[in-house]
Amino acid sequence: MVTSEQFINGVIVYAENELMPIIEKPHQKVCFGVVLGTLKHKAREIFENLKNEKVVKLLGIIDDKGQIDLDSLTSSTIDSINRYSNGKFEFDGGALIGKFTFADADIKQLCEYIIQSSGGV
Image 1: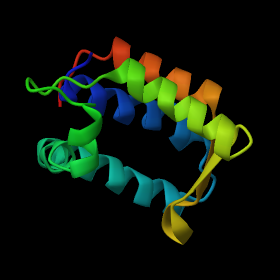
Image 2: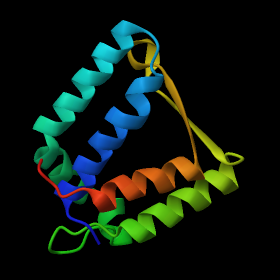
Image 3: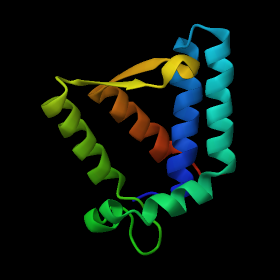
């Protein structure tokens, strides 16, 4: 279990360290930076909206104390990627951000960033 601060901070650090360097076009880097900055500044609001989603409540991904079940979320994500998209998941952020392809190793790496994060959002 991790806090929402750990989760969001880990996602941001992962994106800055692992995704930003592979973006080739300067305008996409700027736009991706805006997305990360907005995520950082609106993290609590975004988290509150997510934890109130019916499917999140149903699955129990976030407990009553706001702790996220990272192990369950990670293993379910990896299983789903391997089962339904041949081991790779493509995220298309459109012309402003570009496309990213994720495999199970990327999800595991993201999970490590989250676990190592001390929060700070």
